[in-house]
Length: 254
Image (cartoon, rainbow, N blue to C red; front, side, top):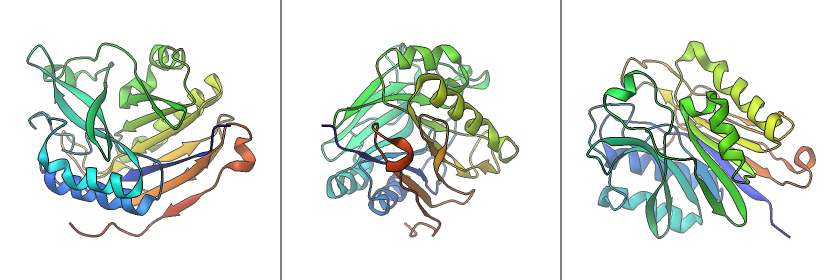
């Protein structure tokens, strides 16, 4: 029988363009999360900075994060721009574990401003961890019913998304999470950017969360940087088997 899965959503500190410092901050949260899967926000490794160069999966600056995943036995789903075959870039999710990083998903539904720099990804995607199938999404994807439907059609257990909203829009990702969870009977984990980042996001919303298939939020973070929220998810009995563990201490400086 498939074992329960510990999942965390993380709100790392972020220095614009500084992949090395941001990878170290991600590594610290992976170590603190004590989770098999740790989900991070959109473009978390670089900040939401359109002029940031693409991040290669083999970039040596990711070494601290790879090492942290190896030590913790974790898979980190992190946000970064990556190179595309046509010479343009994609907003992507990197799946990082103790063996390294791979491009796991490229954002399909771009905001209007994003189209000036980035290219839409080709298809929905799933990563499998310990028999659990995790559908991947980035920000605007979560508000497109077709994306949820196409991803759910791949046979998923959990919908994992990295998002970015301004503080006044803090309720947007929660509404979307509940709709996806109840509409498809899946767990939803959304990691929301906290603090400030580029392109006018001076006060990002934070408030990451994890929702059970009945739409109940079982783990919640506040608006602060350096917060990890985690839950143990079990398909058999989500209301009884869920566990809340929110840590509000700032991450160690890096």
